[in-house]
Image (cartoon, rainbow, N blue to C red; front, side, top):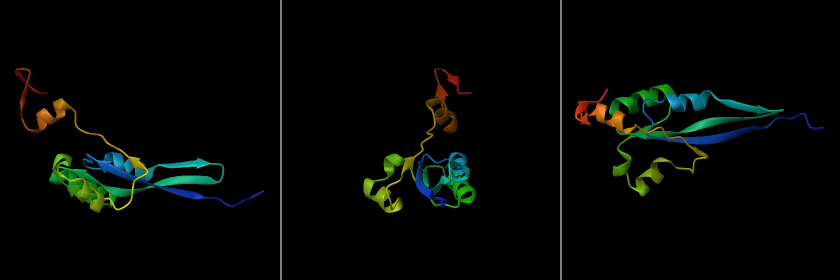
Length: 112
């Protein structure tokens, strides 16, 4: 009977990374089964908000590419994320959130 343990390291990438709360949760998470365990490493994130990118980098210790995903080419994304991630965690803004961010009007009333 083997008494050795194995640690599995899984990589995670965060498009629409925001300030990094979701990524921070991944970094703090661990799974254990018997003597085996798994944890996550952060490959970085992408967000179009420069302040959110700074917060992401501060909270997670990983680099954030400050750009809208619609403006990033696949080649640029592959250059930024150097290995294929095991997990892609995305928490993009909903329509009402985006409307509020730009101070827009939705349905004739200000978004709340």
